[in-house]
Picture (cartoon, rainbow, N blue to C red):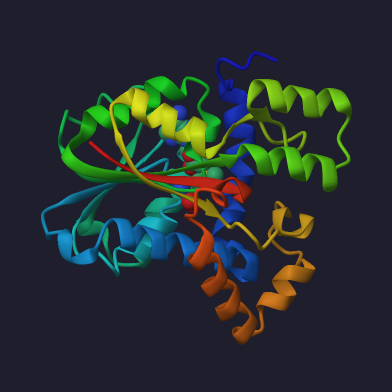
Amino acid sequence: MNKKKISKEEFIKFFKPYSQNVDIADNSAFWKLSDAIIRKIILKNIPAKSIKENDIIMDAGGGTGRWVCKLSQDYKCRFILYDLSDDMLEKAKKNISRSDIQQRVTVTKGDLTNINQIETGSVDCIISIYSPISFIYDKEKATKEMYRVLKKGGVIIIMGHGYYNALYSKMNNYFASIEEIGNIEKDYTVKWANHVPFLNVFSKESMEKLLSNAGFKIEKTYGIPVFIQPGLEDFDPKNKQRSQISKALENKKYFKNAFKIEMAHNSKPTVVNRGMNIFTAARK
Ligand SMILES: C[S@@+](CC[C@H](N)C(=O)[O-])C[C@H]1O[C@@H](n2cnc3c(N)ncnc32)[C@H](O)[C@@H]1O
């Protein structure tokens, strides 16, 4: 297949059913933990008191607006929800209206490799969660575009699928062929299942290099999560199955302890590459 661009058909075929089920991921304690860690890290790198009412946070590849809805409770500012998928944005409009934050959110359809709807230096911060950049093969163009629209001094915090986790997981959970593992190692792309497009994967080093090359100054990189490993059930496209680890994390004490241990180690340079996802904060 052509890894230069996900075809329009492949993109729609993946995100149509995904848009219908992603919002119930919260039913799984693994995803609840992952979300709690991400929210804590966003608040550490973009402190609520540093954001004013008229500031704009752009959610790049914001999908169904899950994060805009959550973060509108932490930040009293305005948001741009930017995404390429009609199906995700249709769901987002409903979620935003249900959260009663329509006045604060502009929903914009567009491609992160060409953000022509947004002016240079006009957004205060950018968040990009659960790896939109993994779906974009021209990732250099997308990061340069995000750099362009961000104000000088603004923070970007961006996530991509983990490279080392892809190798680990393909060997241990999927018993992948030598050829498939060799291709991941060489190409920095992974195909998790037939219905999922090839996705870019990142090490701490390759994510930091991508952002530095676009002009950003790296602040900190995290692995998300670094110790808790999801079960295959946690990737059930319908988000109905529950893994052993999700069942264990339903115990509040266990959840709290896992959160504490993850947060104590997830930005240590020697631990970050254990991450299922790589999450980097950087500044323009
Ligand atoms: C896995 S979803 C994550 C959605 C959301 N950030 C979240 O955490 O729920 C990835 C999102 O990236 C968007 N996306 C992928 N390629 C894109 C592109 N080239 N331009 C804009 N959005 C894109 C998809 O439409 C999808 O909504």
